[in-house]
Image (cartoon, rainbow, N blue to C red; front, side):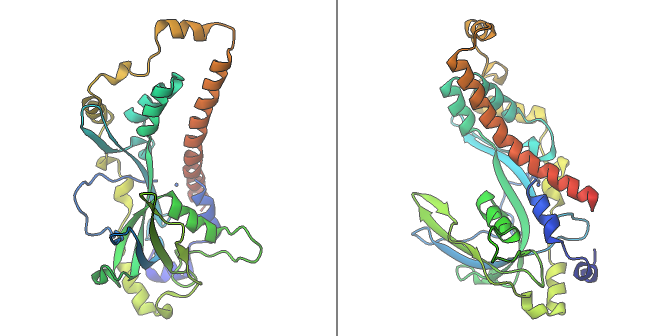
Length: 302
């Protein structure tokens, strides 16, 4: 859509909420990408910046995309850092391996599956308003990658839980709100709990000339969900086997004796526990996939 169409047909907050309960993307580059903004932290691990989430571009159903990747070190000392084919609805060799490992019910196998679990990322356009650590970025449009913690902050304002709170579409030029990113170091990890949205206000006081300049500076998100930017299943499997130093087809297989015991009609407490553990993993994966399905349904209805 054009900028003028954007103003007339702003993203409906109800559509974004529904979509957010279900979304996707993927990216293949390993080199530094100057389109991507990253917050800077001081020696203590603290950081602060203010930016505005930006709306959907023409041809986009949503103002963000989502993708998964894997990042872990194998016993060979090599690293496996690759995007997951599940981001584009395909079977991924790490996901297959993790399912087999988890289904053995052996705690050491489940620990391996946890260490190799896929990681969720979102990508959207932002306008950096304040970044004292990198003032050259101020007033410019960037891509921004973030995780579930910040996505939950977005959902909290789009779908508030209390009667005295009004829904906010943070991606809206006119009725959105600036986001104050506050980073702390908590037990060695970056913590975003203090981050919050400011009061709703039009960006640049609704100056349409400036808003259109921002809109025209936005980056397309298609590449993050473009299958051509993903390695094939066979390529990823070969990389996985190299990192693990063994044939992944045999990993996660139960010894014959254990398989025979599991085929017996008597259901032991251990077998019941194993089923519950598998259900936990499946439920966790399903919750993420349900969000994607929900967004797809919204797109069709729109």
